[in-house]
Image 1 (cartoon, rainbow, N blue to C red):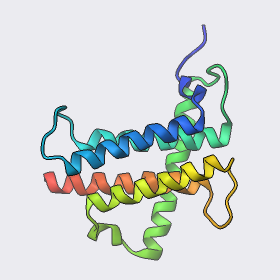
Image 2 (cartoon, rainbow, N blue to C red):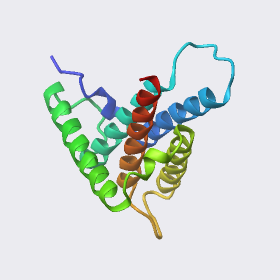
Image 3 (tube, rainbow, N blue to C red):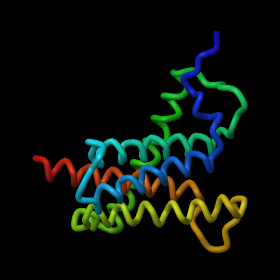
Length: 159
């Protein structure tokens, strides 16, 4: 019996990007709308962005498949590798830039995620070609880190 722990790899990369876009737009709506018809907060949406971005990074490395081909253990290992790489990037950037994100608003971090998403969509629409730009992987990593910064802010506000 095949393990379907990595069934998400069947999704094409643009589908994952669109899922991230939906989450970011939902966050933007929660930030702007006074009335909420669904009692959820931004936290679960930022967590969703992180998870979808990590899935996209794994897909960039491993490719898209027609049938699930990774065990749950292998999926977790690949997930942890991408988390480690992205965390190191965050630490390196914090060293170079300082922790400027601490003075930013959550809504500004959402704006940055949406900007990165538009850039990723543009790269996908150009079949991966860029003239002057970071690669698509750097954009996903930045979105992960912006989402983590937003979650830190939200957690500090609730404390």
